[in-house]
Amino acid sequence: MPNPFNQQVIEEFRAHHGQVGGMFEGARLILLTTTGSRTGTPHTTPLGYLPDGDGTILVIASAGGSPRHPDWYRNVLANPRVTVESGAFTYEADAVVLDGEERDRAFARAVESDPGWAEYQAKTDRTIPVVALREVPAAGPPNINAGSMGEAIKVVHDVFRRELAVIKKELLAGNGTVTLGAQLRVNCLALCQGLHNHHTGEDTMLFPFLADRHPELAPTLARLGEEHERIADLVGQLRQAVTSPENAGTGAVLAEVERLTAELEAHLDYEEQQLIPVLDAASAAG
Image (cartoon, rainbow, N blue to C red):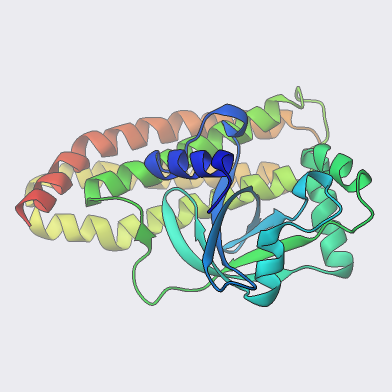
């Protein structure tokens, strides 16, 4: 069993779809379930993570600078197939320990975003490992941690709300003058890709499904489709701001994040108001 502190975090995480309070409030957090290297039993650990794009996230085996690797790290060395809970989704992943320059670049990105990682490394003689968790493509639809289609929309939307809030906080810490760091660029680009994937899924699957069964929703779905196009334009402008060598500071990117946040919040609120009652009614009838 996890220690009492971790168990409390795990229970709160699962009860609130990834939202927790206390020292982890507002942090990027996952639950990582590994297979015990000696016992063969599952062990779940709350961990902070760094986005890395393409369905990959990074976790760091710091153990607070302990001289000993954490248990979860020793587990993935023996059994690299793991389960990741992100709050919205649960999925299988392969844990790959980074080495050499790849590890060093990833750790440097982590230190750039949070100097605490460097403090942990300074406390121990071991080289703190960085582990990539690479999502294993699922055979079917994603496993969303929700009891109905309506709840699933809200859960996924809240992920984007939280990530935008975290990115905005990171940008504000730079006061518009601090150089836009490598990890912060990755965070922004991962958000852009996630929004693109989500809206593509709605345009190609959810909206046609609803249009076929609820023709009265045609004006609503048309409006949502138009809003997707406007948001796609804003996402493109955010990508450009993040990748442009002219935007060395955080100010230009913050402006684009604020524009995207305003448009996206209005869109998500409208979609939830219009679609969740219909989807929940369908779930109740089914």
